[in-house]
Image 1 (cartoon, rainbow, N blue to C red):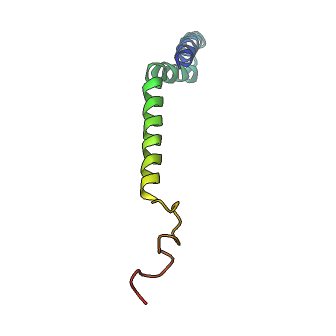
Image 2: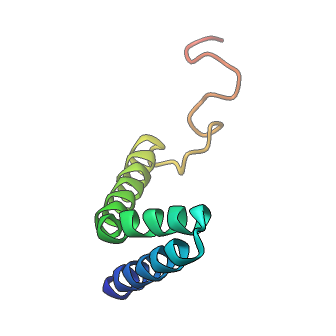
Image 3: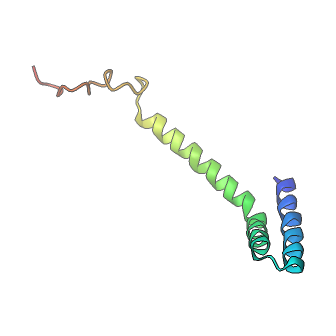
Length: 83
């Protein structure tokens, strides 16, 4: 992850200088986005991975031991306890 931070930082600086010299607003916008993402990327990635794993664990816990099949849980269109 450290190499990605450095790559975004270098890319941002290069785009900023190039955009300033060529008076390119879009290049300077891309530089601002790259420089904004460079320090925030590790925390963003860690938070995304933790949230994804937590959601998978929650989904696995709520699907039950039957593998999550609605028919195995008795939810195939009938009400439990009815004849």
